[in-house]
Image (cartoon, rainbow, N blue to C red; front, side):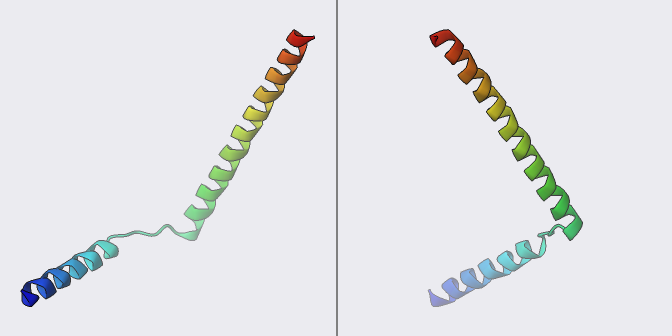
Length: 65
């Protein structure tokens, strides 16, 4: 029973190492591009939400007066 456990555990870690070696990490330039794109898109969405909020606030203020 212990041999099966150790064999299964050994097999698990061999598979884990194999899968870990398949990982391709992005280079510095790719990380910078993707981070910049994320920040720009986040800011644009924030501006759109702020403008829509202002429009709704102004519209409701006009209706309620």
